[in-house]
Image (cartoon, rainbow, N blue to C red; front, side, top):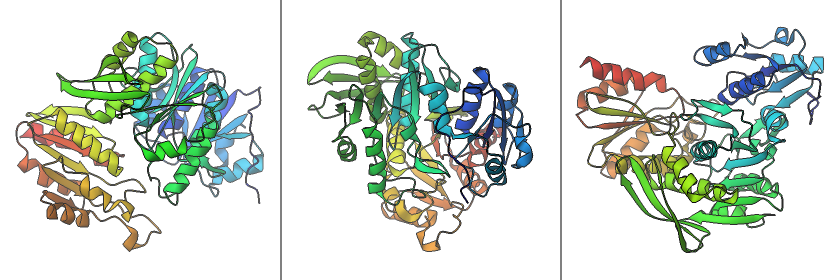
Length: 478
């Protein structure tokens, strides 16, 4: 039986919108945007608890705990279905029987907020959240009053969404699939006018078979750009160069090669800022600075500068925006300094992201001991596909603790990632690594060896059993 009949355009007489999977970060942000726009919002999820439950309550949305037909009473005018919802979900089954119009999350975002604005889409395997956040903050500082939705909490706004009155919509173009009824990538719904592509690597092993499958999705995205559009592409990455080679619009390359439209050079860290110079088509263009460590963040900033230049923002205003950007929660975020031990939280999980993050932190905290605590938690990182790639990612760390991941269901044991094997391989290379079965064990082993001026980098895309707070509390008690 066909479960749902897809609705490509929402009806005009919508008032009550119900959101299935409302406690997801993006879904809750969309709920907030719709609520702010005057719609009556209800929602449901399988686990309604803090902090998301408190966020929803604060904006006047009551979320139903659990899924079922009763959540569709009174009958909503439209339902937005999150990609956590499966075909056999009881509420989805009830939705099909009731024949209520529905949209996926990216369809809804495009219909209600993107289609009336100029769409600036940030895509790539790495750096989407940081680059989108920098762009939104710079647009705001340039008094262009942007609207945005981003996958992290932007410190300049203390939110991951905003409805502005300006022309531009900034979105984080996720290549993950849209919904159970639409297995194409989310970013194919975002109607791009200008796009940044930061990188293309293999990831999301649960939905993509290989790198070629990911490239095909990015090529579909590229084909959506209008003839008068623009792609700012990191052409030092050969995979990016491949996916943009048949673009229907202008492509401007950025990177560290002097042959590109935008090239980065003379990167230096000084007083908590990272300074870098920019050449445009071989000629000196500007010197910029950002309050983020690492060459990769300078490249993210360079891509933003190229977009801002395209829409007419002056170099001086661009530098003001970059230099005042306050960062994003969970991206190289200092959670606290206790007894002269710095505890840092970061979202990195892909091998490339882990390597670049640790290198940036080592440069930023030169002369201090860097201790890394890593939790493989994504569907890809818990598989053996990155087992060998991780071996070369931790060279910037003096000590490494790796949590054994929770095994994936329906994945053969020989296809699962092994923290124990990675620790052994790292030790063979002369590093000091240890695998631990759980978070408690990590804390037990970590606390006695910490010294003044140590930097503890905790890498995970999840809550990691609240390890950051627990570690700081234990340090405070010493």
